[in-house]
Length: 483
Image 1 (cartoon, one colour):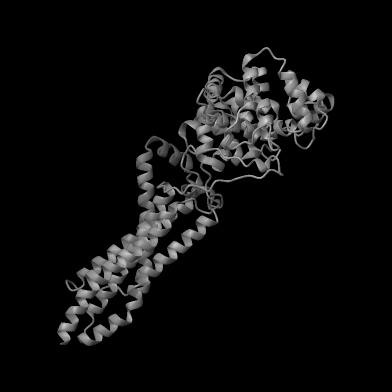
Image 2 (cartoon, helix red, strand yellow; image 1 turned 90 degrees about the horizontal axis):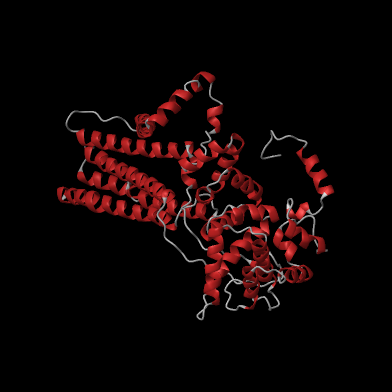
C-alpha cells in the first residue's frame, strides 16, 4: 500500500479471506501441489516467517521431505540428494556435521524445485554440468556450491511461488547469481521483483539493470511498473534511472515550467547538442559569478601593456573558477552522477550465521581493488580544478608584488609575508584527502581511495611548480637587484 498508493484498499481484506480458506498459502503463496504436501506434514511453521528455507530448517521437516523425495523416479532428483555425501565445501558445512542444516535444506529445496519441473532447460543444463563436475574423478565442488548459494539466498527471502517465478524466468546460472545478489542487497523488494518478472520477459536485461543502478533502479522500475510493460521496456533499454528533478524545480513559478515539453523534445532529438548547451550555460553562470566576486574583492587591473599579463591571469583564474562552479552545479542538480555503481560480477558471499544464529562463520578479508569509475573521475576533476584555481591565485599574488613600485628589499619582505598563501595548495590538498576519506567511510560517496589521495598529490605538484618555477626565480632576481 505504501509502494502503490492507488491500489484498491480492499486487497488486504480479500487476501486475508483467501489465507483463512487456505492456510498453507501463507507459506506457499498460492497453489503448489508438491510444496503443499510437505506443508501438510510440517508442524513447526512460523506465521511470521513465510519463506522457504526457514520452513525446511527443522530436523523433522527435512527428514519428512527427504523421505518424500527419495521415492521420486526422477533421476536428477536422486543425483541432487546424493550431493549430501560430498565433501570439500568452502562456504557450507557438510550435511553430516553439527552445522549442516543450511546445506541439507538447500539441496532439498533444489530437489523439490526439480521435482516440480521448475527449472528451465538452460538452467537445468547448468545444474547438470555442476553436478558432473562434482561427481568427476577429480571433483570440482565450486560450480555446484555457487548454484546452491544462489538458491539459498533466494529461498531465504521468498515463499515457494515467488521462488518458482524467479527460477522459471531465469535463463542461466549467471542470471540466477545476479538475482541472488540483487535480493541480498534489497531483500524487501522480493514482491516487486516477482511482479517485474511476470511483466517483463527479458530477465537478463532486467537483472543487469537492477544490478547496475541499485536503489535508483528500484525506484525507477517502481515508477514504470504501474504504467505497463512498454514503460519498463523503455526504461531498461535506455539503461538509465528515471530522472527526478530537484525540489527547487517544484517551487518555481508555473510560467517558467511551461516550456518543459519543448525542452524535452529538443533534448531527445539532439541529445549531444542539448548536453553541450547545458554545459555552456553552467559555465557562463559560473564565469559570471566568479568574475563578479573577483571585481568585489580584487581591484581590476589598470594600465595598457604593463598589466596585460595580470589581466590574462585574472581571466584564466576566472575561467577555471567558472568550470569549477559548472561542475558543482551539475553534481547538485544531478546527484545521480555520484551514485554510479560499476557493473561488476562479484562473488556471492553469505554469512550462514544469519540463517542459523548459533553457527560460527569465517569471513574472508576483502581483496582491495583499484577502480577508476565515473565518480572517481568526477572527484579527480574537481580536485584538479581547485588546485588550478589556487595555483593561478598564487601567480596573481606574485604579479601583484612585481607591480608594486617599491625597493627589492620590500618586495622580498612582501613575498615572505605571502609564504603561507603560497602553501595554500598543500592545505587544500590535505583537506580534500581527509574530507574524501570521511565521505567514503560514511558511504556518502562511493569512490575509490585513489581519488582521496590524489588531492594531496595535486597539492604537492602545484605548490612545487609554483615555488620552483615562478617564486624562486623571481626571488633570485630581487636578491641580485638588491645586491
